[in-house]
Amino acid sequence: MSCIRRGVKQFALLALGAEAALRDLEQRVAVGECADGDKYVSGTSYFPTEVQVGQLPSSAVTKVESEVTSAGLIDVKYGSNFKVLTERLSKEQYVLTQCGTPEPTADDIEAVAALGEGYQRKYFTIPLQSVIAGNTVTLAFLRRLGVQDRVSHVDQYATGACWQKSISCG
Image (cartoon, rainbow, N blue to C red; front, side):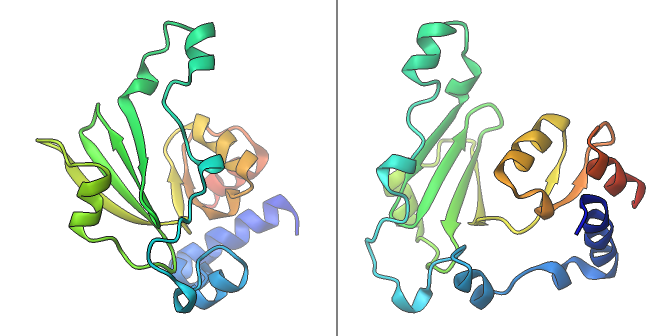
């Protein structure tokens, strides 16, 4: 299916109700996107060390670009089946739970990353099935990850043919 037709199809589905395009948990487990809840074992790590984000900015980036400081505003900590991303500028903390696994308790989250004073905690199940790209920089990353089919709305300044088509579809 061409990129343009896929974009038209996605937005037609959105107009009819985005839920129609989303996979249910059973389908997501079948394609390896979610953990099988029936096989969940407490304490099993769903985020092996080799795929975890390290310190931001990395020592390699700091060595080459010592003026990079904004990466220091983000911190990522890992639980067994969830990650906690803390963003210091907006004072928000995102709890990202692997789909197909149980939601962590408040105590589980606090043990990994305490909620700072004045911070707001938000919860998401990952991987996300639908996202909005509020700027054009994000679009390149989503395309590179191969998940552009999950983008429901894009920035008006998007330049790619498929992104332009999706804008014109409303």
